Image (cartoon, rainbow, N blue to C red; front, side, top):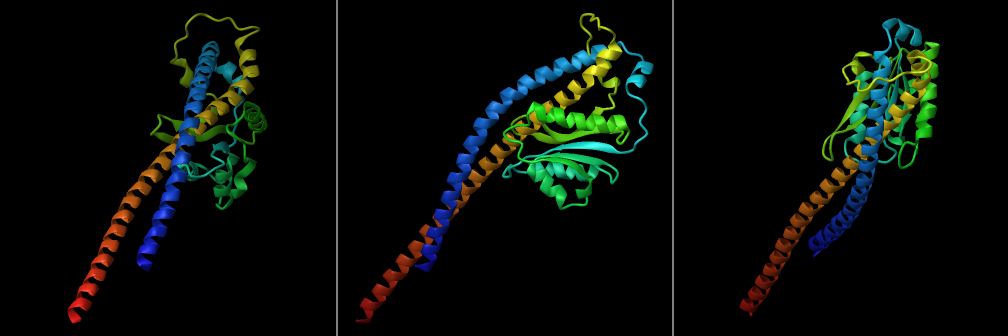
Length: 283
């Protein structure tokens, strides 16, 4: 009987776990739909922004670009790392951390979004590289938050303390595939824009150089925001997939436990019948 009671307890525990993972799967699926709509809208804005910058850069000579972005001899890179505050999202955070470990150097600096990333970095050799951390940033990274981070990054760049600004984030491909990626924000590489179609002619007042210089903070903060939304929709997709897999695994385990329970009970019944028959024969 102790074996049957043990199996009953295990079935109850797995059943309760399945209910929790299934509920979390439904919540994540609902949030995923919401964030996908947001992601589509933000991507449209990002494309318009990049198209505008393409038109500005086409009108600038290499000398103009050098005047706007003076040569920076610093070998240090500022990495803006986007992770989640919550767990139970599969390999989402570990993929970011693994990419970071293979990318960052000892002279680099880190600004980290998300309690999970902060915790992982805190217990690694990269702890001293963190200059700013943002934990518990809520359902999504708000634009005013990315704006303040952009100001910090640009100030470091203008002072010559860093030579480049990069973002390590999760690129959303689809509901099943998301990849940890690294995007460079500064220095702006003209080659990345010049291949885009120019469309109609645009006149910049007072001139392209002034427009570009004043638009850089908007460009950087908007890109960080866009990559943050990409990371958030990836987090929800990863969490939904993880909870779906957990629910499926719980189903398989429940089937195995029920089968084992029935076999054990049948064995006990057979044993009791045998004992009764043996007792009857003895009399």
